[in-house]
Amino acid sequence: MRSFLFTAVFIALVSFTASSCKSRNYITYYNKANTIDSVYKINRDTTAFIKRYKKLFKKYNPPKSYSTYDKYETYIVFSDKYSKNFGKKKSLYKLLVLVAPYSEHYKTLIPLCAKYGIDSLSVEQKIADSKSNMNKQLIDSFSVAFVRDQKLKRSDPLNTVKNDRINARLLKWTIENYGYPSPQKIGMTGNDGVFMPMLTFLSHMGGGVPEYYPYFKDTLLLYVKSGECSPREYATMIDRHEHENKREILYGEYLFNFSDLKKVNRNRRSIGLKSLIDNVK
Image 1 (tube, helix red, strand yellow):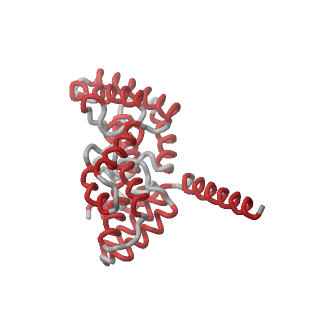
Image 2 (cartoon, one colour; image 1 turned 60 degrees about the vertical axis):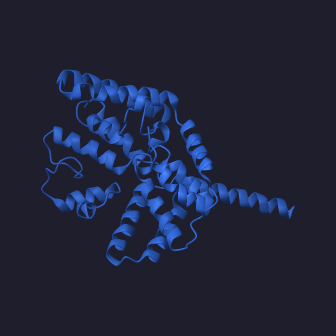
Image 3 (cartoon, one colour; image 1 turned 90 degrees about the horizontal axis):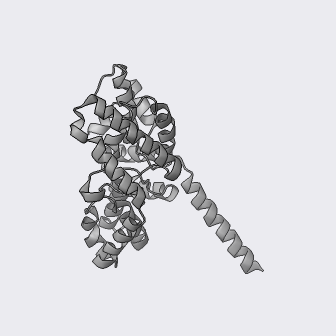
């Protein structure tokens, strides 16, 4: 009986911890990570850097948004270099899943994986498994959408607006049915080698499709908070919209037509971006 109660309590605790981690606001994560990076740039205390990131990653799984795997990778690389425990195989497999969408970046991790007993065949298999879990239907749809997005290099205004509307409908449908099309869902390279950067795609959603903009503005902020849409992608879309409407931009990600740097930096922090000064260091 005591054994049963212990098992039940343990399962409940694990479930609560996983649920709590999943529901955390990643804007807080980004701001904490930015603070850790800023402090490290000043004092170069690697031991403190590792300790702070270890504490952060106990509270948050690494986000799945565009190019945010780098902080987790840096934490692991530094931990290995300074002989600190980072979770070994378990953490390396988690990192491989995060980098799987990014072409052949995973190959840079093969020597480190080998050091902890993960051979190159196992690495390749993990990457293949991660890619097989992506949504083939969405990959097909967004491969077409990204070609359409750059049709005629966007030189024909009428055709560009038409294509942006088609792509906006696809994005809205995707969000409503599958959630945000993060790199973990569609990768970064589509069919026939089509490059699929959502940063560029979303900048066009902020420009030529005003009827969809309010929906994207509200909904994508939720995906920034969930760690699936990056703050930079979101900010670029918002800034593009403000620029197109001849207003000062809010986040400093699309051109630099603003007059109040302090206000822009407050706005940036509100969605998890570094200040503009820290961003260029």
